[in-house]
Length: 410
Image (tube, rainbow, N blue to C red; front, side, top):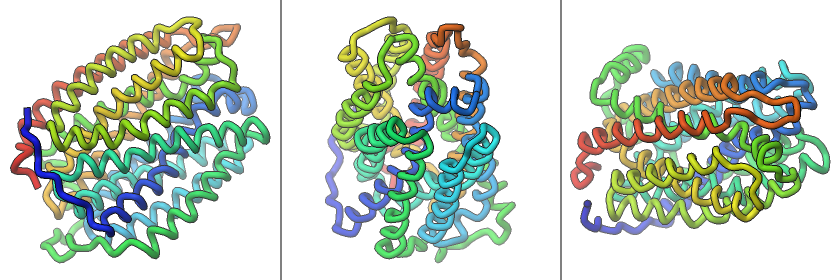
């Protein structure tokens, strides 16, 4: 086990950067997450089958995967701040199209546009965080940035469901736009350029930059690991709402309470996991999170009719396990690429992650069967698949950990 690492303090500007990136991530994650709880409303309104809904979710991922590959060749050739603002503007356009969609095919098109731009943003955020923070601080940085996920649970999802219940499922997407515009303005006027990498020697050809990054064998384990990490979310989340309503027997009106309590818990869990990753080691924290995740996925996907407090407790523990995997994995993998390839490496990683997520969502849509009474069948099958991918990612994480000695990484 790693000994206690030196604790570096954040400067005021670093605090601002972390807060601004977390605010931006809040809108990005909320856009991805809001479609899952809205599934119970969208499917009957747009006359979608579970397979079509799974495709609507996965289309974002496939589009994001494609744009990540295209963007990788150029990701290290521009100021990362300007690159972030460009893709964020496109993301807001896609979200607006989602709000205006009134047929399944228009929704599908809107999700593709949103994915083309939104799927690259996370990789740029990681590159900025890696450029501005030393390795020994990145667990905390990733932990704070990932509180955006919790904020979307605490504020975004309950508010989104409230808007949807009182107006329509279109309203939450308009609300995301209302929050995204201030986030973009904060980044535009408050963040300094992130361009130190431009002073280093760059490859002339974007295509060769992409090719050299993809073909570097040092990166392959990390690429494979990032492909496996999102499978659980893409498989379980799209049908989680329908499972809770139709199988567990909860009312739609209690779903905001579940997301609220779960989100409040993760507000505290994220920073704690980040601190634990910096103090006790990224791999050790990932190992703990993997064990918790496997146990909780097995329980979650096997639930029958249970009271609300049981469902909330299981959700809280499940997301604690997920956070304890995602945060240390991001922090550890950030140490692998050199400065001049961080943008390309992160873009390719995000692309592979989104493509794997898209396949996962499509597989989930094919596995899930909706019975005549609306119940979701074979949800436990998805749990078995997620448990297997969780254990496989743990094995890969061990080898990535061996590849990056934490004490020497910068």
